[in-house]
Length: 324
Image (cartoon, rainbow, N blue to C red):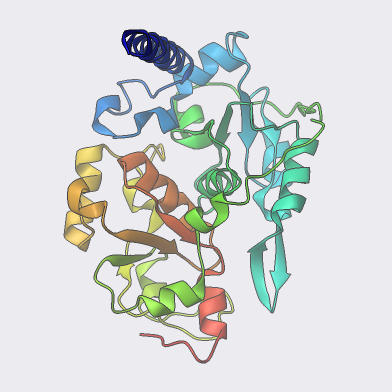
């Protein structure tokens, strides 16, 4: 009996030491935003943001980090000027048309193959950026990667807009990635990170199912701007334009307190204890802007948000679904 107790204590002690080592590794290897842009302690998951200063010091001016910097904009924008050493991964290349819905994420296997071709594996730490003209493409790519099970993914606060606002340089020199052998997706992550129209329809009257419309107020109120089959919104959705949480000049995220004030005004729960019991689903026209708000919810500490990939293109196309 005594021997069993001693063995148990030894195993427990060893486990505790391993946990401490792991936490120490995370502390020293996960980049964070610097204080001039926001109080890093004010975001519950502040480690998901990386500052322009960190990128310059660790990825551009030196090789202190082996993280991969990913430009999520289109090829034209990338070729016109990008952050030095960034590779280009246009999120548009990962989409296809399915059942007349024009922007649907390709199969996990196809996306995984594309990631591997760009030198990305799940062991690599990724830092993504875009600009104010890309509809939150960095957020969509963040969602895609988490959708596939990637756990080492961050966003550059302010993107290339904030980078230039700092006076940091850009280049037109193309960075060629070294392809990886494979990128195996984790299929079980998909249902946890993505919402489907049937799930949303079944929960339209569920007070614990929070639907967030990340389009402009004009679209929310019925304007058809991008060829949607119908105008309007999913019944009960809360309107939070995706860029309302960003500073207009630098595209840097507003402080957590400012974002909480916006949430409170919109009617989005800010009490994390009660929020844990709720499901948060974001949508826009094509799942791009809503991907950015998915990241916002993750940054603020909300548990298990989902992005509706088909978004309003799919919802409006299905005449059996109600529109408000």
